[in-house]
Amino acid sequence: MEAEGDRRAASDPPAGDAGAPWTAVEIKRVKQKLREMMQNPRKAISEASILIDKAHRYEPNPAKVVRLAFHDCMKYTDGTGGCDGCLDWWGVGRRSELADDGHNNGLYVVAEALEHIYTRTDYPSGTPALDASLRSTGKSRADLWALAGIVALDVAMELNNKVCDAPNMGAEGQYHPRWGHSDCRVAAPRKIIFKTGRRDCSGHPFEEAFEPALEGVERRSYMTSKREAHPDPHGDGWKTLSYFKRDFDFNGREVVAIMGAHTIGTFQAEVSGFKYNWKFSHRIFNNGYYRLLTLKRDWAPTGAVVNGKRLNYKDINGEHPPGVWVAESWRDLPNGGPFQVVKKKVACTPCDAPPDHAWWDKYSVSRWGRPVMNHTFCCTNLQEGHFCNPECVHEFDDAGIHETMLPSDISLHRQLFQNGDGVPQGCGRWGGNFKGPLNCGDKYFTVGEVVEEFADNQTSWLAEFFDAYEKMMSNGYASDELTDVRAAAL
Image (cartoon, rainbow, N blue to C red):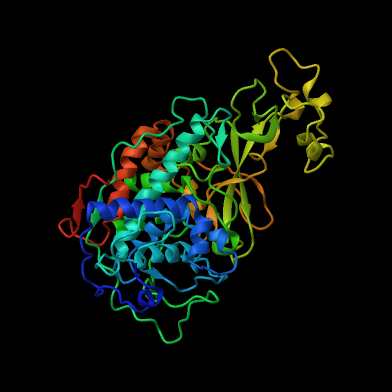
């Protein structure tokens, strides 16, 4: 084990050199370390002495690791780079009125936790020690981040299946909208191939005026002031497709497939300016991103639990309820944005909740044009076959949690475009104080059809996602520059 002083004094492998090969034992042990970090993230934060404010909000969970793996493989604005174990550190820790500022915000904690796996043999505790640290044996940081991205998907898929197998529609705080259906569980089509030989960044000195914005954060070798080219979350489908074609050589199907990574993860307003979650259950990996994007009729939780059973929203006939998109703008940017769409379920009140259940309390007064709704009014003297009084069908959020999409998401399926100021167009009025239903045109060319295919066929999506994910993790390298690791540990 490296002593603490030795660890800090040790130098990285020569920048620009290909990372050294990994043994099967190293792969197996590091995978165990990565799992422990992601499954017990607060323990990992504590053992790494990560002391920034609200560190637990940016914990090294699978969603954060997948985000890091993608951001690591972005190219720089000059067209160089790719997967290089470095992050553009401009704006990290700061909020700005610029829509393109701080894209790597929120990634410090996961990058720093991985740095401890890279430089230490004994971190995190409770995992097998390495004979020597990855850094001291010449491994590249970029290869470690790629392996972390692979393990993150495994962890998120395993949790998905654990939720599907749970007796009460959920586990570990997660809820599955396809619970009880044959497509609830996910099955990996194959193992994602781990390749080694990526080069860590070189020749990216900090500008003199550059300092990490987060208080108490030291400069690290994975921080660079060289500017990365990021996709525009405020952009339309054409901008998204163009970005991925230029910087990742993705075709349309690959773009739609890789966007499914948004099935895990949340928004944090202090990080990106956006709010809410893509999905209510944001830790389980499945094709829920596409089912949400196309507003499939899936179960949605009311938040009410009766006799240990979770209650779902239902339509007037007691079946899966439909959904609608509502456009919202936050007026935090000069153009009135950020802009988002928020899903509402058009559903009955939960008449399977008894009259004295706490769920009814928040609807005991009229607000936002909604009538007073109580069990007597909504759930008695019903027409045959009805689950509730039709006057009690309303727009609800899933257990009070907003599910959302960004313009860059929704425009892959519907005809949403940007004007010169970045304000979404083509979906009716949007901006100012407006908050109302989204009224977009039909599918966005052929990629809209791909979105619908992936919404209906989880197996098809996973196969293409795995291909796109491997291509992403090889960005910036020729086909013969990386070594395919076919080890038993994988």
